[in-house]
Length: 449
Image (tube, rainbow, N blue to C red; front, side, top):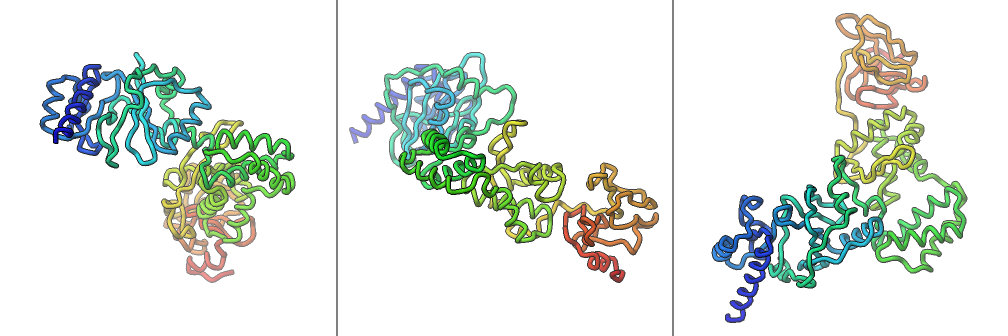
């Protein structure tokens, strides 16, 4: 009992020492990060009397520091193996971080908090994942549990070197965290491809295949794969193993099969009935070939494969992002880098064959532009004849469409146009493709020609 009381007294002395340094503290639940004060952002305090009052009220509680300008600190939170891998990438790109006061959490896979002085005249807000997977920043309106609190695992938080002072943050790090453009930053670990155990061989083979298709020979493959291995594989593969991957790539012909074309061939063998389903299946095949990695979706090339204008593919892609089917992981830079995405399989309906755009029924023909797309003035005057040479028919009278006009069997829309003059139609409303003329005319209640 006496030992427990002594430890508690030592713990309170440490908390009071932190308060004396000007850090604003708040109590958290026992073995938890949950704050016990509902209004902690304003109630957190460095006043010793207040802190002692809380200690008496919340016996055995954990303690946290409210980070930000008032406490004068912000914290880089590094979670486990993923966080350490992202930190390596961050330091490769921005330079090593300075030695600073560091606390160790009780996570089973290891975790640490690196403390930095809050920069004068700047505003830093917390943003999980902004610097990379497993890296979090605790600053304005954030808080961090401090030693000698107890982690939920039962292990104590500890200072790595208790006498170490809090360092100034590097200017490059401050700039990254105070980006004034307001643009979300892509995690560096996703932009530059950290490959962990189980993903390293496939990742290097994928990169090597891309180099080979562009004409790389063995010497170049070995050089570039070894560099990629040292920078992006955690831990790196043995040099001999990387060279074996390079040798296996040389067996393929220069220019070899293109992943995008292979994926499209697979989609064609399945014949999804709608354009949206075709696009989603294309993404699915691309993602399955690059498990856990991002995929490029070049709209011009996909448009050529699908036989549609690139703007249509752009709309498919935007819609997929909006619905949560695709997650952007690398920003598009004109003439330099295509946008990269990851397919979120769990968000996609199980039966992709039924995927369509949200239905917007029309009671007349959609006007078709010279490129074969709906124009802005979507509803035609009923008495006009559609000017497009491949249009399915005529608009109706003032009372509605002509009874002889083909109709979409899926959404009952009259917005059809002929596909490549081969006797089938595509619906501009729901994107159903390959509609046979006999079926389309039958929906309208008239015999097939």
